[in-house]
Length: 271
Image (cartoon, rainbow, N blue to C red; front, side, top):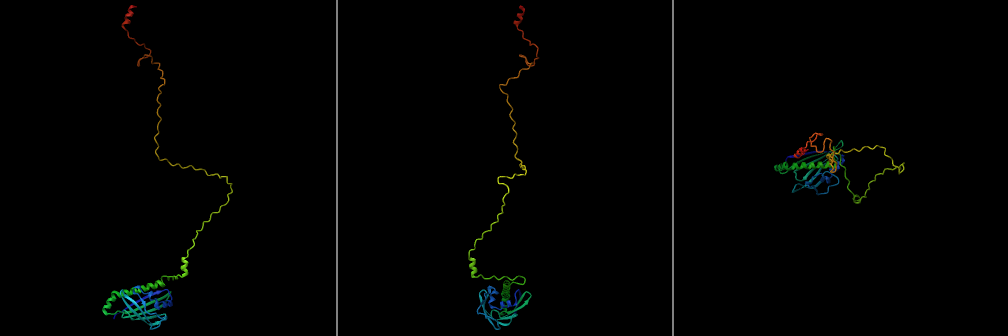
């Protein structure tokens, strides 16, 4: 049989007495055991620990297989260490040592496990394929559960939330009064020294209003129509150089030659 070894160390920001009381209580095993193992205690554990104490439980190491786990407390030295060994269970051998040491700011918890598998080569093969991985998951879950409960030296310890009582439940169900919003204080008004009918003139000069430029195009200027000559307007007098009967282009003052007819010639011979 080949022995396998698991060793874990965890530092918690609590006193060694508090760590001892928590780890030695079989009732706290469910708080540090993953749910897929389905740990259930078959007997009521005693109030005080002593060498030779037997704890009987049932676990489910595989999804469809349930196994009994009976362990015996073989050695104890409060509050430094205690040792448990498997008497009935899935392993051929299981030896678990719990050590507690006080350090600055808390306690150091160390676990040393020596175990061996059954069924020779078949058990060794099954250990390499499945069991080793599940054991590391179980102890990782335990470390996270302890850190979530007690904190760590690098993180503050979480505050414990008190369980609500019946009075707290009734107090929460009681309707709360409507809170009125505080009114803003109004500014204090002082009486005016001027008579109410008198108006104070505005001594500030009025500034000319800025005219907005008209961006629209100007319409074309329409010129007034020219006056038409009236129908009854008198004609202008003829110029002196124009005489009655004078033809245009003829010089003024010259007699106009008249045509001589045959009657005028015969009339002259008779004289």
